[in-house]
Amino acid sequence: MLRKVVISLFLLLLFVSRAWAQEGADIISLRLSRDFGFGMGANIQGTFSYRVSGPDNLVRVVFLLDGEEIGEDAEAPFRLQFRTETYALGVHTMSAEGYTNDGRTLQSNVIQRQFVSGSESTKVALWLIVPILLIAVGGRFLTSWIAGRNRANQDQPAIVGPFGGTLCPKCGRPFAMHIWGLNIGLGKYDRCPHCGKWSVVRRVHPDALYDAAQAFQDDEPETAVPTLTEEERLRKQLDDSRFDE
Image (cartoon, rainbow, N blue to C red):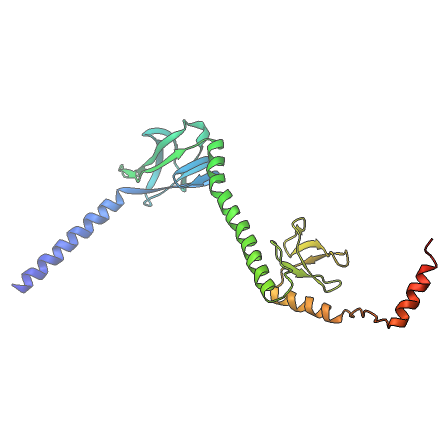
């Protein structure tokens, strides 16, 4: 009894695997690639390509847009390039039909996209890019503000601006990098407000900036205020009075 059950299960699995193999052999794979233009989600605009892959005996592929033939390719790799501006704006369905050398017709999967205009693609991109820029800039200002408050609470000089702080390689003094500094990849070409020289600088940790500022403050000589005696003060007033009219 058990033997019959095992044989029956084996035959069933064999039948199912053959059915799946046959079904897979009757399908070709279609994908859409962007050659140049805009693509975000289901919205596309610009130059794109159908790309089809299938069995080794696939000899010709017909490309369809909304069920209508728009081109074909008889050589692998099977590909068709098109521009969205050639067709009406709106939702379109893309598919393909493949033909084998033994006379079979194979159907592809279906891809659905919405063709948008150039102005619409720019608008969609701005809706996504502008908030990201605002968040990035706002984050920098918030970080600088928090760092400044922490420095103020610790009686430490805040030398970190919205673009970070750095050390001048010429005079060694710390300063906040300026918005007009030029980004050149390796760093920022900026002018030191202390020595007035331009250099390529990079962002430095606030602790290092504070240590450098403290070092320069300690090196500066303190200006002593002379203390005059009463006799010296009266003599000075007498001398100054000679110049009064």
